[in-house]
Length: 224
Image (cartoon, rainbow, N blue to C red):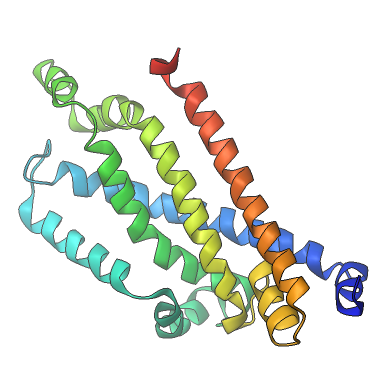
């Protein structure tokens, strides 16, 4: 065991990095879903083939979502530092990183949600409409429940994507395993620390994947 690795363990830096990575990933994904889920629903129902077509709204939201999805994450971080300072009082650290992750993930999640809901069979929707079911109830009792498995899979994919973005936290003095890999591993020429961080990130991804897939299988009525 090298001196650098010993120091990381003795000072709980590596343990803190694991916690910060999980914390930023889960909080960012949760907040991004609170934004992206309703946005994805609106994109779906206002589409030309949706249950309440509103072309101008759909096109406007679609353009906004596509613009944010097109911006590379590192560029987005730099561009929205002032917004981060406005929202959380500073443009560095874990809180600022969470703001950036939410901005990057919400449009991505919106498209994932839109894709999931569009997988719901048209016959189910038409049956609900023929019974005079209000739009809100069609969304909450038909579209979302029928798309829940796909939505869970999308949440897993989104979480892993957000986790990968946390690796850039060192750019704005945020923590996490990515920052440790860059600062303690790459910059201080300790490749073993870099690879330990890589292994831990892979482990976290596998846990997220396994938990998400188990939940999806448990809720999937077709698998019973």
